[in-house]
Image 1: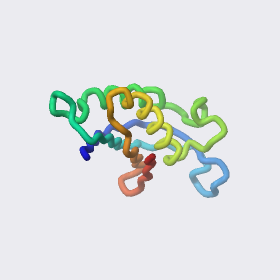
Image 2 (image 1 turned 90 degrees about the vertical axis):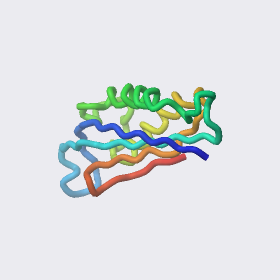
Image 3 (image 1 turned 120 degrees about the vertical axis):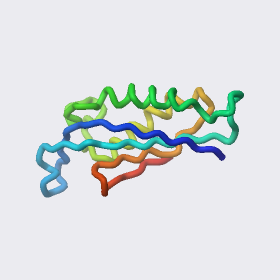
Length: 122
């Protein structure tokens, strides 16, 4: 089994309703996003998938949430835009795009700070 991982970042604001504490107030993060994809076999070029392709897909997804107030986006309507829900959102968007390349999404890890992260996997 082969795996590739890329890392990008984005900034966004949110508030988390009904959890208590300061996070119920408007605040922001400089999020770091790690995505990992896998496949059993390499393609005819000896690659699992081109890093540039993954970076482009992730960049397009992050463009929709970068420097945004996440609570106001339709993608997070009715749910807290927590790191957990952001990770699932990115995973599902990535999965749609990479399936046609013969690779599988393994996980998305979201770092909210240098010492706090969540992971979503299938």
